[in-house]
Image (cartoon, rainbow, N blue to C red; front, side):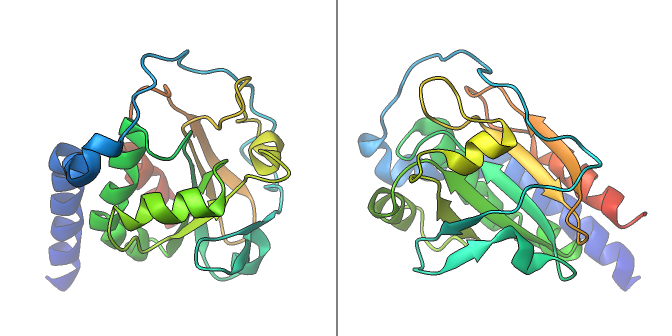
Amino acid sequence: MKKYSKIFFAFFVLFFVSSYAFGLSDAFKKNIYNPGELKPIDSKLNVKVGEKAPDFTLPSISGEKISLSQFKGKNNVVISFVPAAWTPVCSDQWPGYNLAKVIFDKNGAVLLGITVDNIPTLFAWTNQMGDLWFSVLSDFWPHGNVSKMFGVLRSDGVAERALFIIDKKGVLRYAHVSDINKRPDLKDLATELEKLNKN
């Protein structure tokens, strides 16, 4: 019975987040810059599902340096690349993951948020969102180096809106580049995370 309660709760959260959570930027919407409609996808992936994900180390807004390899053997890792701080879709996407934390916990996953913005910009931006439970990393210098490794650095120097899942062995299990103008569907991510428990 307890198992079914957890599943029901996870689906309830998923529905709530998918439907309502992405209006959380209202509190600071006057500071949000709207870049207008952009080319949906402007890059080509450099990584393949089933292969080892490239390791990296980046600074976080907490002052720590975070490496992908530090989670090997411990956690599945979801990487969320977003284009830029203080933009509409990005400012809605990341707060939604706060409400969906149960989905990550249920599947033994940590989340790493990455943009090409510098640390001061990311610190100010994410502070306006409240307390994010996940690490926010800066791929500012060398500019977009990690984004480039994964093949999600666009020609204008920002990252794509992309999600990757790396399993506990360090193998890439899911890669999806979304239309930069739209937030990715959280249901798809939840489904892919569930698959890790079946293998």
